[in-house]
Image 1 (cartoon, rainbow, N blue to C red):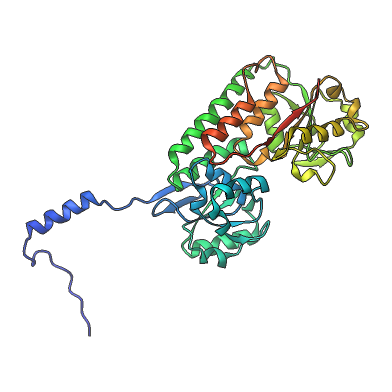
Image 2: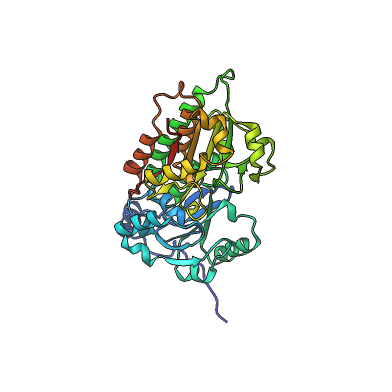
Length: 376
């Protein structure tokens, strides 16, 4: 039979030099403190040290990491193809960080995540989106990853960006040793948002009616927003979204006849490179002003649209659709506030805000056209 005798410090000779050396080592080399943070779902995320091997559940979140780190690519070992970086932005990252091509694909699209591939990359953190929460397949994947000892954190820059973008950025900052940069961007963002809210707090200020035409094209009119991201942007900027009266949920369709009958004070269309094939509004990275202008003029010159008072009075605008999934949406809110209330926001320059985000925070520069308005 094997027996165990508890250690007895009394029976050992006292060695003052050894004790002093141990105390010195403990002072010079303290144990690493755990990193504890709360994600967007209220879950506690614990790391032994700042994450240096990250898997992104959305490829587009590379640009968010870029707000926090000079070389975000060096921290990412895997990413999912769902909501990937657009081609011009990917090209800009590739030109500066060729190692981006070595990042492993851990899933090809929505709700597709390879746990085996992720584990093989030996990450210390997997970042998922709020939109992944609640899906049975993604919940199983999360459980398997956490059972394998891999931390999982949820962020949100899409579903409720005004409420969750800065908390999500601060979360990533804490988990990746980017807290100082996260606070710097938070101050930049929150100062601008507070300026808008302060100037619009007088209840006597008239809120113009706004129709938001998403993925805008002259045909198959019209997809619009009832609740959610763009509705929130409109309200923060001092407008009243007319789609909220007729659309149940985030997105819905109304007829061109409805739009003409409503005749809103402002017509706002969203577009992107994805609309080129549909003959719609083209805006975004690597889009020239000339191309954006041609597509916008074709849209507002189409039958029905051209009769809108907003078009006739120069109150029609086109904006980049993907502002709905980046902290840079603060510039869009500024743009809308200045459009709706030009007298209140004469000193606000949304173009300058975008330039400052690019030069002060982003590791890459991506030219493009992000908004356009009626030619006067």
